[in-house]
Length: 315
Image (cartoon, rainbow, N blue to C red; front, side):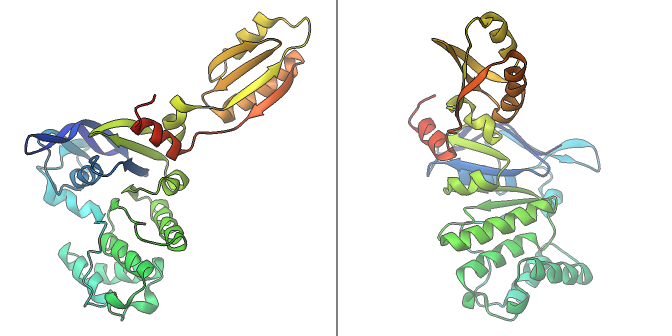
């Protein structure tokens, strides 16, 4: 089910389109990674999703479970903001306040009653492993703990959607791994997570959906397999025995989830669109027809390779 939908959204600044005719549906429970070059419009996209800025054209809508209908985010911002948490790239907490004081402050901004706020903070401190640091000034925390506090401040009101801008920036590989694991745990609680990052390997590891922004437009959007599909390099090579009914075998193979079939002398080279399904069904055909699987190549294009090709203008 969709929770946020950008419909024909254009964001213009001084007659220059930062984002141009963006259509993007974010579903409940998604872990969505947003990637693009610096200046491509990633942060602008996040600001539109959170309602911090209004689109020049088009609309950002959310689905209301209560009213069972779509409603404009801009026109209903006060009602919607309690369902959205946002963690900017740079720390948003107050360094001269303690961990507890920061959480109390942000919780009060959302108008939480004392009991709800107390319960939420207790659960958050345990969830983010900040319980033993709750009396420390935020400025005295390590970099990783400060990022955990930042995320905690965005979760204190128990939002349905968490939006983050470069959550692993300036962190070492160990801390990056810890923050990514934390985001996965947040997502497991049913919270939709949307984050922009230049660390494409991180997005590839934990995201079920990816959107690639290029020159202010959505170039690609979907699952990792869908994003990779135009750049697929995986293939299977089947050796045909003498006397094999080639046309019959090719006809059966066409029923598989494949991109194309190329005949090379006594072999057929198959490029799949879905490796797992193709492999399972291919093995049945090989067994039925008495064929031999001669070569199996599982070299998938990485998200980084796909992104580089998109930026370079290759398709």
